[in-house]
Image 1 (cartoon, rainbow, N blue to C red):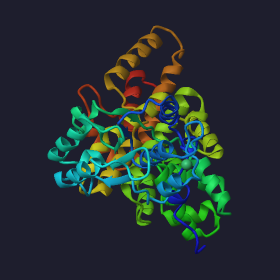
Image 2 (cartoon, helix red, strand yellow):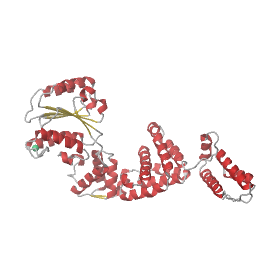
Image 3 (cartoon, rainbow, N blue to C red):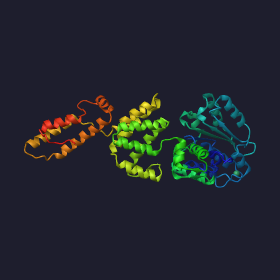
Image 4 (cartoon, rainbow, N blue to C red):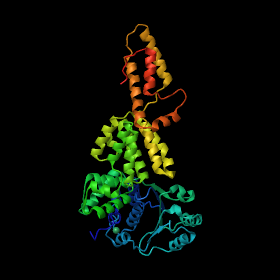
Length: 450
Ligand SMILES: [Zn+2]
């Protein structure tokens, strides 16, 4: 394993056709190269780790290549090899995060005055260009206004909105996409094969997902997994190593929410919390879980979520056990809590309150007025000679009582909480209250409420 290099560097794409998920950008650039329509400044924007500087280098290579092939660099000639190794004298790479001042841009201005030493084009690849100071942007603008024919700027940024419009308007813009989980998975699979590393499907998925659309990040996690697990990566080891909540945990939680089992849920959460999970990760994981349930429930298609086949199957089953309304309400609560969560000084308490709230989503608040009027109607009918044809209504009421019985007995919090939550005209009916009420209305001694 001693010669094991960091995957992101070793497996950096060297051709446009090897770049994942950015076909629109790579195809447009290839077409421009083939038709000779080269711009003097390009702006590549997009999230971190999606291939901005990789594409910049491939473009520099393709345009300076001695033997380009259909718009692609040969990766064999002297120029290509020097660019790959980062030693080409006409390619300048700058990180604006650490070189952001006017002097840094003046140095570019000076260097830009001279013809390229050995190639057709001289490149300045400026990463995180939005970090430049206003003075530096002004100096950059001067070069971009009248660039010499041999000069090409490739500006890369994660925050294009922070770049002055005067700069942006002089660039050809290419917004890059987050990389699809399936493409990250394929990439990792390829690396694993090349490195002779055994890795199971679930591990591949987990690592790809952790990359969150950034191939480089996923490759970083993959490297960590290799250093921990060696050449045989198993899901069970991996999730212990990463110390992240397993999907199973979220299914367990949604089951308790579904059953309104607040007490058990809080107990379960505390056990989890003792394992030291990052609560922010847990919150996001739970939100994503409910989101996935919503997608599967509303489309009836588990193929739309980024999960392994066995997990997809579980989503299909679990979503059947919720109504659409229930899922919508859960998701709404989670989304509304997001900003509170971010700025909370005590995330544990907030999580507990949130879980308690979620677990009560299924308990319907009985509307006293509504029940009374329905019962009056039933009473009238029964008194007017109808036999108990309204048994259905009664059964419904009985269900209501049971729901409240369950909630009240299983957590003490719910009663006080519910009192505070009540709007006018609504009240929680305790089992005994309603029983008495019905008894009173019907004078029905023998009605069994359990
Ligand atoms: Zn070449």
